Amino acid sequence: MARAGSSVSRAPRRQAVPDGAPLPNELLAALPSALFVVDPSGTVSDTNVAAEMLLNLSKVAIIGRLLAELLDKDLPQPGDTPFAAYDFEIGGESARRQRVDLVAAPLADRPGWRVVTIHARARAHIAGRWSEREGGTLSAVGAAAMLAHEIKNPLSGIRGAAQLLESSVDEGSAALTRLIRDEVDRVAALIDRMEGFTDTRPLELAPQNIHAILDHARGVALQGFGHGMLIREVYDPSLPPVLGNRDALIQVFINLMKNAVEAMRESGGATITLTTAYRHGVSMVKKGSDQRLSLPIEICVLDDGPGAPPEIAEHLFDPFVTTKRSGSGLGLALVDKLIADQGGIVEYARDGSPPQTKFRILLPRAGKKT
Image 1 (cartoon, rainbow, N blue to C red):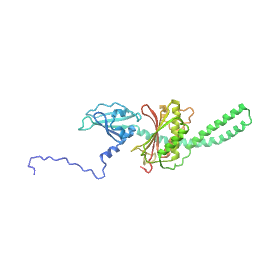
Image 2: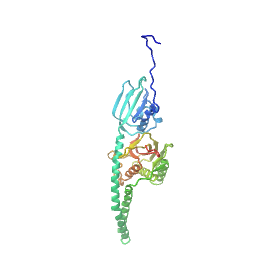
Image 3: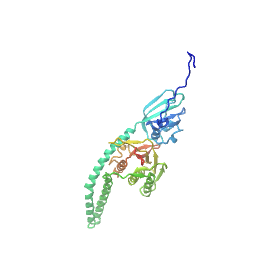
Image 4: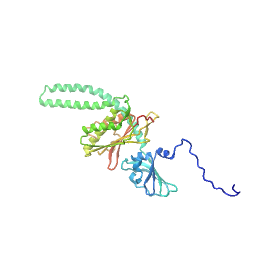
């Protein structure tokens, strides 16, 4: 027993972790903000899922590299006081350039070590664009249905009359009737494409092997419009089945690859890259519903083309928006509709160094509702 007036040193009492409470590594993985643990040399020693999403790189590819190199931005030297940078522009080899808020804090008892958190400003924009595009797609459905009904029926009569005239006129006039037939066929083909918007029935969704679908679409491209192009495959072989519609997904990837080929033929590019990855923690709240839908399956179509002019990039998925002289502006709008019909979202970005055009599709995993 201790004497009166003496002091007894005791080890601090450790508080027990309740059964079922999240472990520190689980809390780190669940953080919505990108987090990097950086050593005195500026090298990343640990990170979380949000950081993988921010940089579009796996944890293995991030750890062991300089944070300044990953962000394509010089950072202040290590110090013993926190610092913050707001509306800070970052980039990187596989991440798009974007504005973020960055906060760095020193680690106690570890001189030179820091924890850097990055808060992206783009997420609310993505969700907002999804809701806006839903409204634009519905408008396109109504417009397409009306035009298909009002225009396509008379076209067959015009074409038939031109064909009859062709057999009873001289060669000079016959050339004009052939021109009429050709133009009627061109307009009819345009109407056929617009009719893709008129079918509002729910798609039949089932588990799909996304790599088999990509291989099929790639084969169609190489045998036709993409002949002579290089279409690279960078796939995650462990990817689980996606919840989708096979025919709709094939049409989506054919449209995206055709769009890439047309863009590159004007600029001299020759390579398309198809990538797949699993992105933990990506989810969206569907407009008009409180249910959060997980969208972990990522498929990207990248090309070496010039990309969309900045003034129309925000409206690229709107109907009748195009940069091509002979384009209808319906290809990407149809892609957006088909992906939305499967509960997913498609995004456009210019990423990498040198920059590439990227269309990024996020889809639900089969069997996962949350």
